Structure formats: C-alpha cells, structure tokens
Image 1 (cartoon, rainbow, N blue to C red):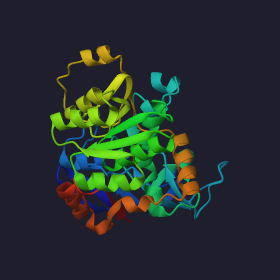
Image 2: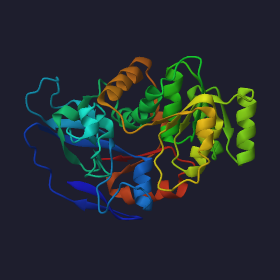
Image 3: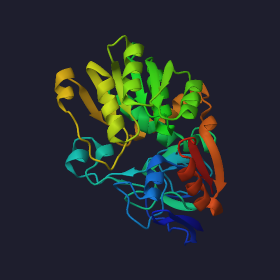
Image 4: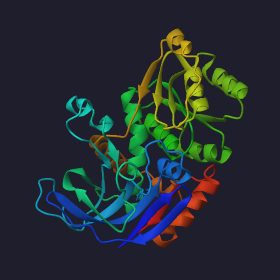
Length: 338
C-alpha cells in the first residue's frame, strides 16, 4: 500500500508499506480521504510541539470498513466511517477521573503515533464511528468540527452570549458554527480578509480584520458597546491571539483556548484577576462529540464540503503540503484522496 511520511521539516514522501495485520478487537479500514489540519501543517513546518520525525501524519479521515469481526456496535464491512483518533492510556490520573481526551499520555494519530494517511489502517473497533450516511468528504471534516465544538461545550456557550472567535481557519470557522448552534451571537476576527469573507457565509453575526492591536481594541469596543465579549475562543495558537482573547473578554467572561502553539507569552496576568476571567483549556474531543455532530450535520444537511479548497491524489501528497504551506492564509481545507 501507499503511505505518506513526513521525514523531516519540509520533506514529505509517499512510500510503500505492507497492509497492516488486524489484531483481535481491530478492523481493517480502507482510507478514502484525509484532511491536512493545522497541526499537520505545523509538523511539516517543524514548529509543532508534540510531533516527532519521521511520522505518518493524519487524524482527520473517512474510510470504508474492509474487514471486521462480530461486534456489539452494528459495524459491518462496507460501511463508511470515521474514528476517534485520540488514544488514551486508561489508567493515568486524568483517565481515572473521566478526562480521557486529556490523558496524561495522550497519543493522537499522526502526532505521537502513526497516523491515518495510508491506503489501509488497522483501527480498534471501539474507536470506529458510523458515518450514518454522510459523504466521505463531509465525514472527513467531522474531526476538526469536533475540536471547536468540544471547546464550546466546555465553556457552556448558550443563547444570549456574545462570542468572539479569534482565527478564521478551519477550526475557527467550525468553532464559530458550533457557537451559533447553541444560539449565541457570534463574531470572528482574522488577519485574512478572504477567510473572513468565507466565514460570513456560514451565518455569523459579524467579522472584523485584526490588522493592528489598536484597530482590534476599537472593533471590540464598537461591537460590544465597550463591554467586551461574554466568550472569546482562541483558535490560532500565538501569544498575540491569546492576548487578544484576554483583552476582548468582558469582566467575568470566559476564554476558551483551542489553538496549540510553541511560543511562550510575556503576559500581564493581572488582567485575569482584574476581570475575574474563566479560562478553559480545550483538548481533543470525545466520541460523544463525534456522534452528536454527525447527527447534527445530517439533520441540518450542512454543506461542509464548501470548506474544501483542494483535493490531491495520494501520489501528490508532497505537493498538497507544499501548496498549503505557501497559501495557508487563503486556504481552508486540503484533502488527500486515497
């Protein structure tokens, strides 16, 4: 089979490997599409904290079940599925307290362990999630949808909240859609006008360009009558955007940190005490998040495929990563077709 490997920063190669053997409790999946996410791009650039080389990337994917044994979950050969890609140890302090998405020894596919960017993968049956009739392309976008959705659930976003999402990449747009799903008024900001233009097609309440710190503060003041936002959602992973999120939150507000960065921040932390802010870290997602979003996308027939900028065949995986690297400011989602 063909498998995609990130050998070192800036170097992607398609190699030949053996089809994996299926162990007890696993199923053999034929991968259909894989999405290159922000963490994959950061791994390609050599700036992702959790990644080690060489590695097969990828944790956003759809697949067809090729081989599976008897199971109590109704999963059968031929079904189109996705999977929960965050492997937890099951016995650390976090796992014992039910925080399996924040396992102290978390191993996410394509980051701390081999990923999904291969023609075939073996997957524990317990992690496979029925796609319930969603198209393979749409199903590939469920995992990034879950990332923002999980954070929105963590902070208890509700009707009547004014929410600002900082960062209009794929995760940011999907986080904004998740907040709208809860009935909130949702605004989004980014340094890219083209990304903001797309975000506004998703039914959001407003947007503004984050061009300078001064203009950012003025936009926040104008949008909220000087009060600040009830909830801010950081979806970039930079010190400046984390600071933006703190500054834009109202007194007693909630700040959700979704973005993953590698840089330290020189922080005037007194703002946290002064505003009595509630800060929520949000890591990965739960299987229940996947299931709830699949049902929601199906029930509302959401056109998630509109977020897909380009699809590359697996033989052109290196070109796919390079294109995203060059044009990340204007591209939302790139898929690799297997």
